[in-house]
Image 1 (cartoon, rainbow, N blue to C red):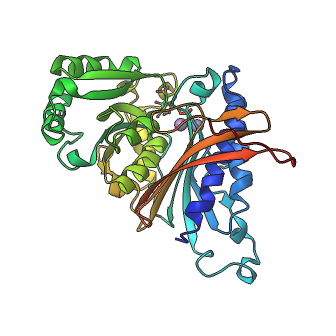
Image 2 (cartoon, rainbow, N blue to C red):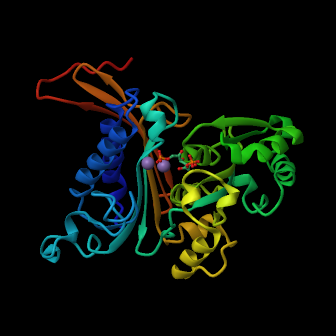
Length: 347
Ligand SMILES: O=C(COP(=O)(O)O)[C@@H](O)[C@H](O)[C@H](O)[C@H](O)COP(=O)(O)O
Ligand SMILES: [Mn+2]
Ligand SMILES: [Mn+2]
């Protein structure tokens, strides 16, 4: 993968975050989402790359932009060989969530980001729009905790790996009725629970850094977000496992009521997945040789600030991590609008 993509891609998530943040607190989640999608697509199409969306806003019919299969980047043009380098002509797969946490943006709450993951062709798992049971934990616990173990067992292992008592652990769980039993078990084991209304990508990535006071993510969220989280955790060397949830009874949401257990198993078979209970780790969900994750805060979060506007511009904070560069690059950018020179206030 062309190394310069990692620098240009920062602007993709920045532009998506800025566009979405203009809708922050206005109670309009669809508009916040659409603004991010449009901005992400527009900036992506200016990059010298040959990209294909493998996780996006849905199938072509229901999503006018950034749909699964959409080609993005200058080097997708038919005559690209005339003006693109051999490296730029290599096909790359892209998973996007232009507004991860649309509710958070609409209601002005913390933790929303514009995110994406990139790898070479077939380097990212093409997750269906299923739910996914997830377990994320810090690098020190990688391969020691296991989603097949009980939360109580995993908390014991985590406390040993992180050299702290169970009482000193904080586990993020999405605040959903489906997690009633999980939350009770974590509390009974002695750990503390941080409930979030949305945004489990942010929670998963926080486990990859020490000092965030988040030591695990447990529970069921969406599968596409699981792949993007796995890409980030692969770059960070953290623990990430996911299991697709095919039985609607496990989640019992209006979304899951549209499906049946048998129908879901048949859908998985069509995709070539025979074992619906398979547990995928980060190396399988983001299996490419080179994997890159980029995110930009829309509203403030644990890792990144949100977009902050001032007269004549705004300031963003992004994070780019890649297996290739072996860096976790936090980027603080001031964006100026209009032509007149501005005084940049650093306080
Ligand atoms: O909170 C989320 C919403 O993402 P988005 O639609 O892009 O704003 C994600 O982080 C979750 O992983 C997931 O989408 C959610 O758990 C599934 O929805 P729900 O049925 O409300 O739990
Ligand atoms: Mn999302
Ligand atoms: Mn989204």
